[in-house]
Image (tube, rainbow, N blue to C red; front, side, top):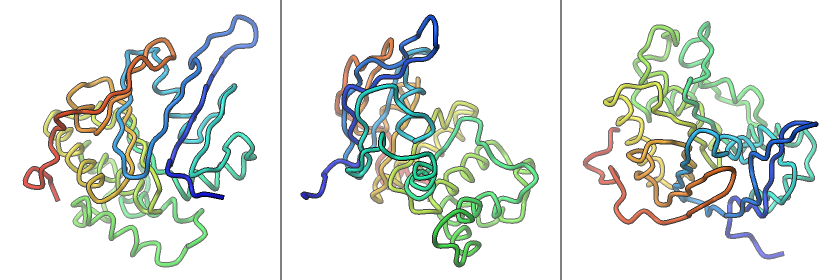
Length: 241
């Protein structure tokens, strides 16, 4: 069987909520993402972009259509198989950080490795990715002792620690001031130039234009899928290391 060239491929993806009066959150969504791409998904509230991210990130199941991840039919997998695939292949960065307040920065980042097949050298691996986002001086701080921008960098490190195939960033600058938000986008750009696949969910044009491609959604449908002609902040001199 020929090796797939797409990391993610969805065809006629649908998501319906409700048993009586039903709401269609996604309507026949079709697109693909190649390894190493940086794709932004945009749309107003209620457009379906967050629902789509939850399905792509294996946090939810589609009501219909086809979803292939690295050539594998996701629809045929059981809950345990989905959880394993999610832990090994997918990293998440959320607007609200989703960090454990009673754990140190180091322990937060090492947490996904507890469920990984490769459990060796957890702290060393966590320290390495924390160093890559400029937080080697915060290892033993608790997450309520650091700034919002630093918390989001902890979340990025956590997403990286398992060497995920794709990183989903859901409004990663939404809770940050403009300076911290810019820093986060520069880090995401650097990760993309290093070969990481990134899917960014955002309502901000400025952050979306850091991507190579923007998918616009409205009322559960894709209304446009276009390449970004002039990407923001991708020059090496602008990247925070």
